[in-house]
Length: 215
Image (cartoon, rainbow, N blue to C red; front, top):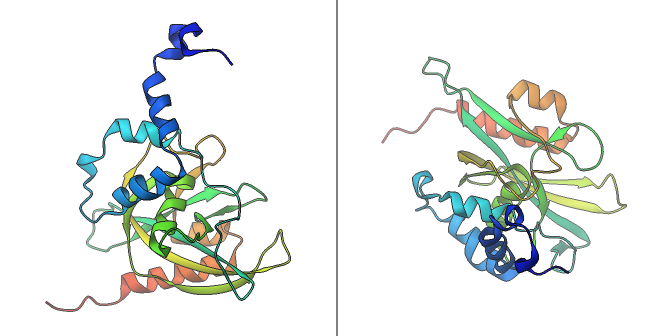
């Protein structure tokens, strides 16, 4: 392995970001970075570009040794990232962010395994950052769905949360092998192959059209 001192300057100019990324180990990522992003006090204006650059160097979690199971069902959590469209009206029409699947076709919402060292909401936010590269407020759970894995002969418990996006990152951990796209609700339901995700989206839409309680 070449030392940093033997590398040309063009490879060294981001050395500081690279070193900081190496220090963002699994434990530091779990105990500092994602809890920081999960904080209700986080402001978009306070999200430093340096932090975003480091995030793209953090390897997504892999392996199943910390995976949660309930009676043999793998527990999976995810988010439906959404934002309000600016259509010149007072109607709160939303659009949602979908991402390409690593295997298979179609687009889906970010999701992944819930692990034993994190809360359900933290896991949902982590998966959304890793796969979709957006940050926002994780809202109350949309529900629980049981479905069969298409790649394995096991059942999964899927939990989905809405995430109101307040920051879209230019750099994120899976940016090199995932595409992302903002779509209408109808477009997302057409392109997503997972029935349980479509049902979660229906729940989110129903929340948007419910009358707000008077204060």
